[in-house]
Length: 95
View 1 (cartoon, rainbow, N blue to C red):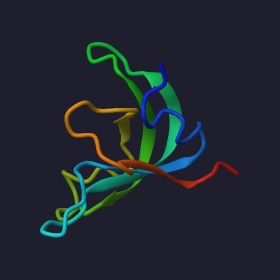
View 2 (view 1 turned 45 degrees about the vertical axis):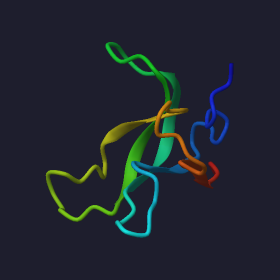
View 3 (view 1 turned 180 degrees about the vertical axis):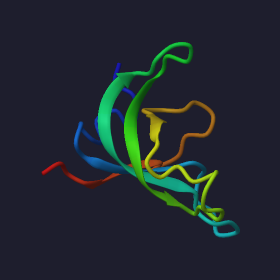
View 4 (view 1 turned 90 degrees about the vertical axis):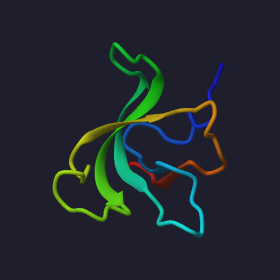
């Protein structure tokens, strides 16, 4: 079974993934990063996701400790209760 965003990007592409559904009454929270892997995340969590290296931590209001730029982050292919349209989008294809 293919999950909702599984085929949005391939390794090498750059994606944008929202932490929360964008709403007019709060700033957007998202990460933009290059996909370095796809598939099952390591134990103990073990869910299917993109693994990205964060290039932009959008909406980050506190530089430093909370900033994810340069970190490896998992972006689930699908989430159950909080899924919405365009949660994950491809912003750039691999060269």
